[in-house]
Image (cartoon, rainbow over all chains, first blue to last red; front, side):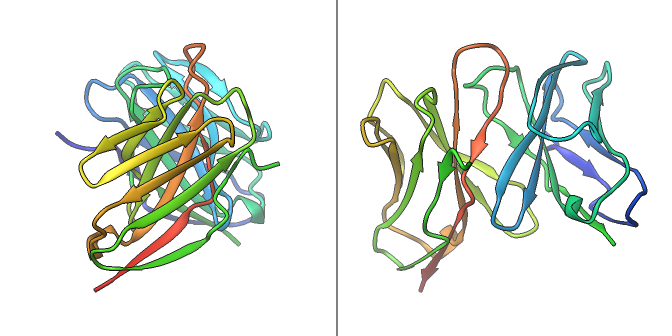
Amino acid sequence: KAGVTQTPRYLIKTRGQQVTLSCSPISGHRSVSWYQQTPGQGLQFLFEYFSETQRNKGNFPGRFSGRQFSNSRSEMNVSTLELGDSALYLCASSLRTGYNSPLHFGNGTRLTVT
Amino acid sequence: DQQVKQNSPSLSVQEGRISILNCDYTNSMFDYFLWYKKYPAEGPTFLISISSIKDKNEDGRFTVFLNKSAKHLSLHIVPSQPGDSAVYFCAASISSGSARQLTFGSGTQLTVLP
């Protein structure tokens, strides 16, 4: 069974630009979550989608947005990029939402903002 | 304010010995805890979890202990193997409600020396 696929793996953008990251969950998984990892900060929750609906949102500015399509694939968008947005963005899928459904992470998209 | 803290950024252990990774949390609403392992250039992989109704959960070489009164959990790896060298993240969540949000610690780099 294919794992969680994130594209692209690496991205370099300029401050002020916008970026879209893509995530294909494991087949059959309906929940997709996004996390940001920065050095020394661990992973910080961005948002979770289930059945095309945003179920929960972390403490990030409105420049960070996402959506989920009917095939459970998800995209994350960051507008007006800032230098501090440079991070590893991780997508995770699970069979269902809820605390005890294990998250399966992709290998991430490394975003560098210059 | 970090609600989940891993105060040791790194730990070195000899092969065959026990590795003990520690994690503290401040939010008393957390009642479900997980450990993830992360190799470079890969996404985190789920290791083991524990509900607050238990104080210990075991899976092969991995055991997680939970001390609710101290708001402390630990991961024991016995015996440690060189392949265990990775960054270990503890994470916490609240089981009530249907949304899924994990709060992660900043990680501990474990190095198992041959």
